[in-house]
Length: 64
Image 1 (cartoon, rainbow, N blue to C red):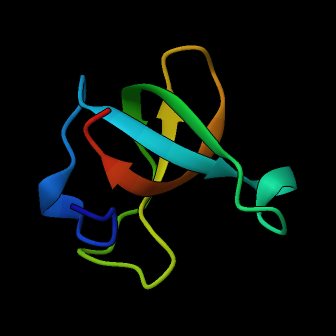
Image 2: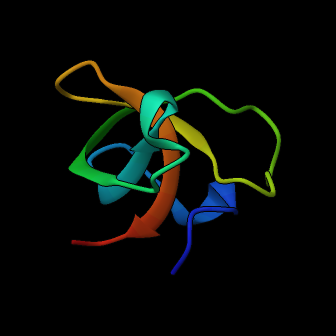
């Protein structure tokens, strides 16, 4: 699953995100969702989340 639909992502989900500074390279960072920051039901570039370690990025993959 990709991370474009908010309904697919819950707090505690294992995800891979792309951080703002990694958008050009596409490097993914793994983690557990702490907060969902995007309010709309979907976003073409991925739902923005905060991981438990404080990093913020857009979800590219759900499940690790």
